[in-house]
Image 1 (cartoon, one colour):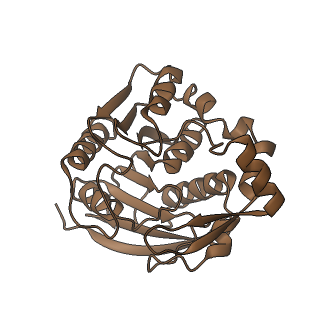
Image 2 (spheres, one colour):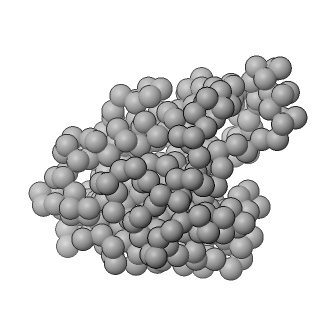
Length: 278
């Protein structure tokens, strides 16, 4: 199999450019593809995502890794686009996901139309992957890592204080940056509740779905994975509990090395896609 190569692309997204990395071992024949969707404060180059994309490409898949247009992150991996981050919403990320799928299937990302496609989403990106998969017949398989089961992550008192101040301050623990989060995301959830109901979308998933969640995840409790599993009617829905795994399964940014927990996640993900993508 050819050595994977990396190409970079940009599409006009909901809040600005969607920056996209495409890794593929062969660019002249159709093959299965996987989109990797990052979570809140994540980005395509965070920690474990490039190693995942490289493994996918070496296994014969086209790996497509976008930065959501509201990620706030530039192509160097720096949070230089704080206003976009501040105005980001779930609906914007859904539009970006569909945009990337459209571009992939219309051969605008430097590779032929895929034979099949899967979505892989981490944390908030897992919730977006569920919302995007439910109505889209192009998606043939789904893998979620540490996925959220609800878009509303803030209690009533937090939301009231947030609205009074007009913004919430979000600290980047790695860089110390304080990023603004305006009320756009609250407005979006309140105005588009049914369209953003992740649990309801889980009930409409009909493709093979692998949920992976760490038993020691303190950011998104494993109870959310159990709720999603219960909501899914699919006979090919499986919940993999990673013993001792945290929210990122031990991965950090900048990337250092894999962990036993992350190896379980990588292997299970590739095995699932090998089984269900043709």
